[in-house]
Length: 278
Ligand code: C2E
Ligand code: MG
Ligand code: MG
Ligand code: MG
Image 1 (cartoon, protein in one colour):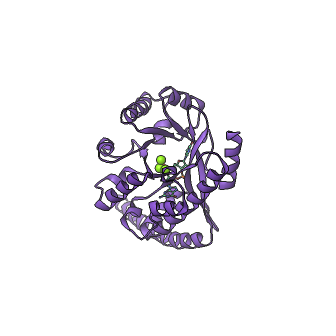
Image 2 (cartoon, rainbow, N blue to C red):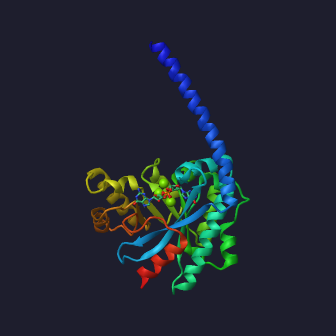
Image 3 (cartoon, helix red, strand yellow):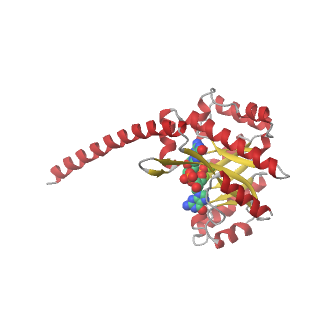
């Protein structure tokens, strides 16, 4: 019986693997057409200055409403975009959309508006995509208004191409944020080797920060260490007031999370900006 069960299990496993592969191929095709048919959209989530309570910047986050399958999470489709190579075009799309909105929001307020854009490790491997510093110079948006969010995966065994790009960002004023901080490898060496402006504490620590001593200790230590290095800190995934209280007490610079707002379409974000600024 065990043997038969094993065989069944094996058959089931290969079958599901096969359909998963088919699903991914289909999703990659659908993703391509979603990009051209504008079904792929850039939303914005506010990042709030924890001392003033004002929206200080926004993270651009992709949203995909699939005709048949409904909303598909970026956690699902970004890896597919990376595998299929479509991430380069998608990345250019997010970047140019985010820049154009940042320019409009900067024009409407007295201050320039800052945006934060995720860049996948794969996007560092090809030079054919938009050259961020050149593009910003051409449009006239100060490079300091743009932050690139990378994960430790980008810095792990960083190629010369990655190092060159990051050096160029540093020279031109584009800021670098290390995303999902605390979940990766030996993060501390990177902080010495690369010019990092900002750390984003991963939401897994924030989620239980008020009930788990270890999470709280980790978050507080990241904040203290970052500040010693002149690095700003953003806490991701703040949902509750007691989490916010702890982070404020720990001196965390910025917060992002559903307690303030989820990612919303640009028009809604603009309304959010006008309400909070007035
Ligand atoms: P991330 O860059 O770490 O983005 C933060 C994620 O946390 C977003 O998920 C956001 O919606 C979610 N989040 C924010 N506040 C809360 C909260 O209070 N509670 C909870 N539960 N979640 C919160 P999202 O939009 O689903 O994106 C997931 C990941 O997909 C991102 O993680 C990022 O790695 C990737 N991604 C999204 N957009 C892009 C993009 O334009 N380019 C690239 N390369 N990756 C992207
Ligand atoms: Mg991010
Ligand atoms: Mg993150
Ligand atoms: Mg993440």
